[in-house]
Amino acid sequence: MASASKVNFFKSCLIGVNISREITSMACNFTTCCEANLPFKYLGLLVGANPKSMLMWESSFEKLSRNLVFWENRDSFVLR
Image 1: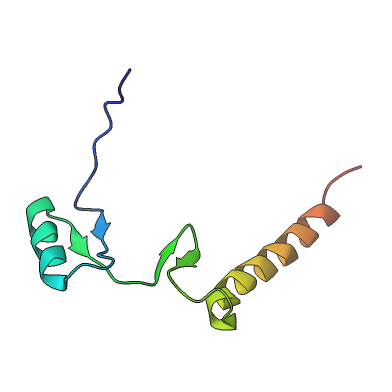
Image 2 (image 1 turned 180 degrees about the vertical axis):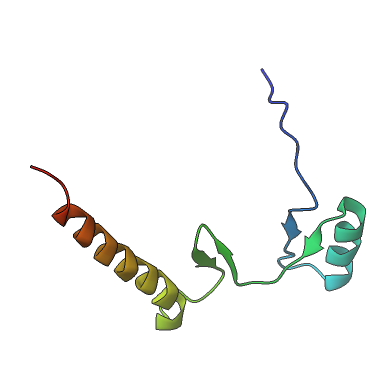
């Protein structure tokens, strides 16, 4: 069984790891996708950054704290 889903190369980015930039550029031209660099965000988290650095987690902490305030306010409106 196979899926009929196809990769949308116009929405995709290619990141070369341990290969020359020339090869990455040729691959991007061939697949018509854009070239990206590390670190990048995936599902809101930085990939390729130093996980021990506070700067990496800063945006996640801010988003979580905003959600906590929202969730706390939402619970006060729930009828019990």
